[in-house]
Amino acid sequence: MTSLQRLAALVALSAICLSVHAQTPVDSLIKPQTPVPAASHSSKWYDKISLRGYAQFRYNRLLETNPDLRCEQCDRSIGQNQGFSFRRSRLIFSGQLNPRFFAYIQFDYSADASSTNKHFLQVRDAYFDQAFDADQAWRIRVGQSKVPFGFENTQSSSNRLPFDRSDALNSGAPNERDFGVFGYYAPKKIRARFKRLLDEGLKGSGDYGVVAFGFYNGQGTNKPENNNNLHAVARISYPFQFKNGQIIEPGIQAYTGKYTLPKDQLSAGVKARKDPTYIDRRIAASFVLYPQPFGILAEYNWGESPGFDAATDSIQTRGLHGGFVTFSYQTHFGKKFKCMPYLRLQAYDGAKKHELDARYYQVRETEFGIEWPVSKNVEISVAYAISHRKYQNLGVNYDESGRFLRLQFQANY
Image 1: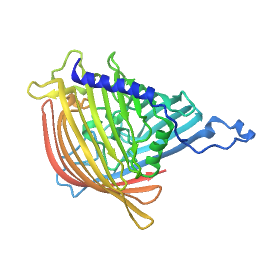
Image 2: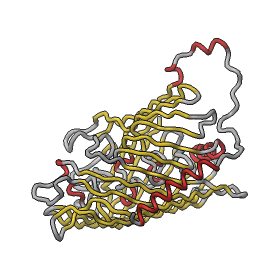
Image 3: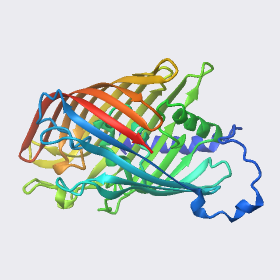
Image 4: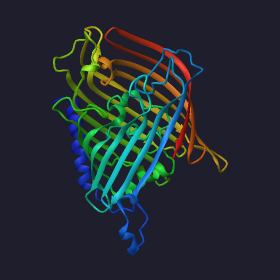
């Protein structure tokens, strides 16, 4: 057993132990409900369904110094021949259909069918939670949902400060989601704390449990399984609150499995195994200091995955490492004007298994910007990015640097 496997096993074992011993008296997550009038018992299931969403409209080319700089993983409207675009356009149906059953379906109506066909409707999430107790401390989630690996990965894009997720952790779970079965545990008091971190604009990730574990295909969002091996994941993350109200949240997570490169992801002539299935595993550490008013979010991961090797023109199992740190400050001017400036530094040396020939990357990037919530329904963000991106796949040695100003209009509805 390798050291990475031991660490992954330790995380899983710790998750089970913590969940067994974490039963403590807790406060109520929601306000006590008043008795329901008899007439309301005839309400239908669709009366319990909510409809909401958000859309992010972007322009990335102001003050651009290099139109050949691009990023396939983060935002394809960066660089040459690009202009205004919707980065995301989401529509979410969700509802607590009974005290222990929750349904969540999210569509993206800005998905690209190809480079010349935009704005197709695509399923992003389709999952169902079944709770095993009245407090919903124990839940099982089935369907397509976010893989509980990393804080920023589980954080909604509508709530994140930087325009895109970091290359380092997001490359482990492309588009953050997969088909699987996940178990979550969090006592009622901590579930209430997770909710408050969102409600008070402190950039929380939502309720993904103090303990999370599960199994998933490992091929990515809306992708079929291509081998007979499931990925396994485990995560522990706890939001500690001090007497002065400050909250920090350290976390550790790991996953392990095997990834199979689809045929359309392999260049003609690239050397790969007859069965292009490779080890895919990582371990990551997270630390959050919630912005009250100063905040820090830092994550780093290590592992191995399929990656292109230029010396042999082949795909091999290669090591990887990288992470990021984001500094933020929540400030108010008067009673109405609020904004949050931030600075994010990131670095990544490793492959992106979901790209052509499992390209091997070196990324160094700095982004500083500011988010301004104009109203409940509108947020405006401005950021300046300084980026250096290198990657290699068969016949390609990409190496570009540049700077550009980014604008985003976010509508919440």
